[in-house]
Length: 452
Image (cartoon, rainbow, N blue to C red; front, side, top):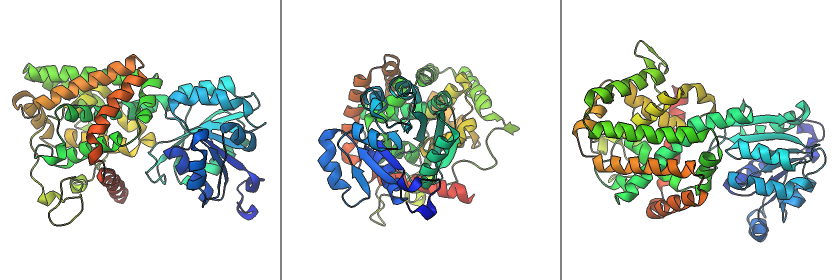
């Protein structure tokens, strides 16, 4: 970094160290390096040669281990799995340079902060962060949580200066506030999509290949389910299992799913309607005083453009709504259960929009669409009681939601990994193109929202 553009004295010689070069670590390394920061990075020693080759044409120095990175860096970011943070910090933390700044970008801050407090020297400042998006999402305009846990104003300002090149919106929270909000906005959302994948896997169907799952809401479900299963299992396991705030949300989602499904099975029309409408009022407000904004989160018709069904008029995976079959009536059990879960826990999702991920905004958008579109909610309740088209799928979805909740309650990482891996393998042949379609859908929705 040239002295003329240095944001603080000595910035031209300021070294940023990255311990962990997974997808997010690599994204940070490339973007910070492109902004002119000196970067030193490492991963497991057996990956040293591979990383040296990968970053040969970048201004990024790859070192053999975290001891070397810790000794040489002014600001060290641990970019490792949440489940491994304690072990990795215990290994490399004592080597931290005198007076350095240390942080992590795990999705769960409780174990991260505990590891830092236990294993870092007392003369080290602690400033953690978390980019609330995946490694393939453009960070510009996305929320970036900054946690000033144990640091001087000067150290915190240096971290802000380094990370400003990401172009993200800085959000200032404590570690506990971060974990509560991510539990509210991410943990249950992920479990909903994970459960959809398990249900479709159990019934041996690729939902985009038939005529049952068609239309905007279904496009969101399918694309984001595939997006999650195309990622690494530990991202979702760590956030759900290690975040103490997430356990009650995931348990309540499974409970809401089960109880609503029972009401549908037993034909208890009045009780089902009363429960769903009570949840609607608690989460979204009364019809004369709604909590949602004047404009919907999901612009009209935008997600209809992103089906995985092949378009006969071109060679892309995206089809226009005009060429698609009309959607079949669906009870949208997953969306009803989400609102029932929020209601039971007293969560108002709009309160957390400053920390929302693109995935959460899409999920809240389709949920809002179901509950604010005249007649659509009543139609979903009618279908749940009278139409058995999706009954088999709903049964498998309920079983899956309960399975994930039990896995979280028992803190079973290995069981989570196995449950995830077997369904990931089922969908893996269909990942090609799915992630691109999901990315395009997210970009289009965000761009349309900004224009409105």
